[in-house]
Image (cartoon, rainbow, N blue to C red; front, side, top):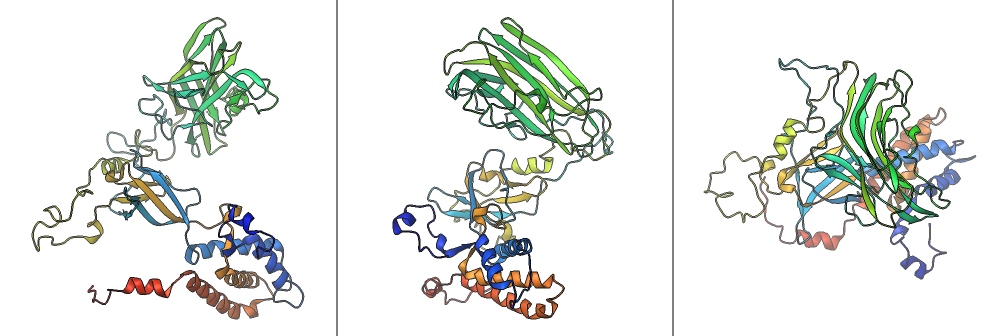
Length: 494
C-alpha cells in the first residue's frame, strides 16, 4: 500500500528502501477476501485458510518462472571444494567465480562425473552387510575437525582470548576451559559439545565406546560424556551456575542422552575427574542401545568443569581429552552400506577433485595451448572449451562440488527459491499483483463444486495475467536495448 504515514526522513533512514514496489502476501490475502469473496461476488464462500494456501502456492509457482531471482550467496571455496546448498534452494540460475577486479566468470556444469553412493563390498566383490559396522566418521581425529563433526554454539578453537576452546592436538580431541565473571554469576564456565548425525532408519541396536580422560585441578573437577541422543546438544554452552540473569546450558544435564540400552541404562559413558588433583582415564563401552524407534541419532561429546574456586577472569586450563570414538551396529545390517572411508566422498569424486585441470587462468589464448596451428582443433567439444572451471550438484548430500582450479576462489551462487522461506520474503511485485488475484480466483473455484462453469474463462484470465506480469517484469528499456544492439548488424552464423 502507500507510504502516506511515512515521512521522507523515516524512509531514507530505514532498512525498507525500495519496498514500495512490493505488496506483502498478507495484504494480498486480506484484499482478496474483501474484494473477491462474499455475496454478489465471484466467490460466494471461501475460508481464509483456503485462500492463504492457494496464495502461497501462487507465490511459489510465480517465483519459479515470473519473478526475478534475487537470492545469492558468496563464499570462498575451501580445500574441500564443496559448498552446501542453501536451506531454501530450489534450483540455481548461475554459478560464477569473481576475479580481483570484481568481474564474474561463469562456471559450467559437468555431467561427466558425480559423487555416487559407493557400496561396501567383500574381497570377492559381493555386497557386504557386516556386523560391527562403524558409523562415526573421523572418530580417531586423524584428520582436521570438519564435517560431519560440528561444534555446539560458539565453541571456539584453541587460543581464542577469554573464550573456551576445543581442537585436535596429537590426533586427540581436547578441551580448554576459561573462567568467566558476569551474567549474575562469578567464576563460571562452559559446557562445550561436539556432535555428529547418524542415520539409524534401518538399524536396531548400536554399541558405543571411547577412550576418555577427565582432569581435576585445584579449582575444579572435569566431567566428560559421550553418548547418543535424539536431539543435538544445546547451542547455548554457557554454564553460569547460580545465575539469575542468564539461562544455563542444558548440556550438563545427563537426561540429554535420552536413549537406553537393553537393560534400561542411559545411552552414554562418562568420565569424572578424581576427588584430588589428577586425571581419570579409561576406555568405556555401552552395548545394545535401542534405536528401533528413531530414524536418526546424534553422537555427542560433552565436556565441562564444576569450578570450586576461580582462576580469575579469562585464565584457561586444558582439561578433558577423548579419542577413538566408535558407534557400531550390534547386529548385521539389512541394507546397503557405504564403503568405509567413502561415506560422503566416493572414489570418483576424490579422483575428480584431485586432478588438476589442463586449463588454467593465465593463458592469453595466443600460445600453443589453445591455438597450436590453424585447423588442428578438430572435434572440440564446446561445453569443455573453457578455462573458468566446472561444478556438479550432488542432490543426495545437498552439496555443490567444484573442480580443483576453483579452490580458494570467491564463488557466487545465484539461485531460485519459492519465496516462502521467511515472512519477509513473502511479498509480490506490484507488476504481478493482478496475476496473483487471477491465480487465486482460478485455484479456489477450480477446486469447488459450484464454480466449474467459470473455470475455462478463469484459466484464460490467469494465463493472460501471468504473461502480462512476465512482460512487465522483464524490464526492457528501449535505450538500453538500443545500446546493446549497436554494432550487432553483422550476421552471426550458427
